[in-house]
Amino acid sequence: MKKFTAFRLLPLAFILLAGCSPKGPYALTNKVYRHQSDSIAKVIEVAKPVALTDSTGAIVPSDFVGTVNFNMRKPNYVIIHFTAQDSIQQTLKTFTIVKTQVSAHYVVAKDGKVYHMLNDYLRAWQAGVSKWGSVTDMNSCSVGIEIDNNGSEPFTAAQVKSLVALLGYLKKTYNIPRANFIGHQDIAPLRKPDPGPYFPWQVMAQHGFGYWSDDVLELAPDNFDYATALRLIGYDTSNLKAAIVAFKRHFVQKDSSPVLSQLDLNVLYNVAGKY
Image (cartoon, rainbow, N blue to C red; front, side):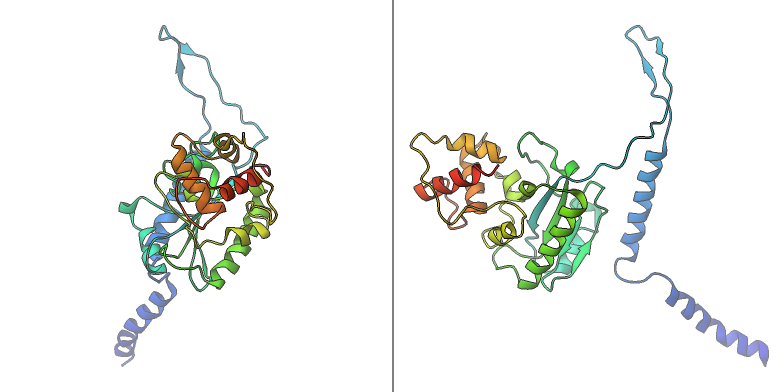
């Protein structure tokens, strides 16, 4: 009788053990994340001399002496995106399958929930081919934030509130300069329109994340060099029309034509003076 009872209790034991193991739709991707981060840690731990030969093929003497003065590289920019997808679930799936080859450090859902998807010190695949000032590898120096928005709708109040909190945390933690909170369209004007015309850049600037033009604008002078002003801010002006469109999407937001009106010139003149 005791053996029979014990046998019948085995399935229950297995159920209880299973209940204690990690579960959920992202248990497998979290496991892969841990495996890959462990692999990176092992690379960092390697401490050996570099193997060099000179032009004659002779071995160059070398040794490894570990310095005591170092730390991890930290992000210096924040790049804001919209997901261009229809749900937070769709975006999380996109960032947890290999074939998409895209990722971000954070995703902000419509209800304000913040999903942290990658350690801030690691390099996400979010900026792509881009340029800002003299920086041509934005992925290596930035945190990428995706906001659940398809590009044709306003951002929710909950998203804006959570984003302000998140940007405040990043700014304080990594001492990110005010000017370095920018959008994907700013760094890739030929390819990307996000975070789009609905993104509240003025509200962000009021909280110290990026700049916005003053309420009272001085007229731009007749000899105002707007191409140089765009470059001063950080825009890549190799395609000047694309740079103008990107600037207007960020700082004007009323139209995205590649032409600068007098008002646009005044805004540019004012904003460029802040950089």
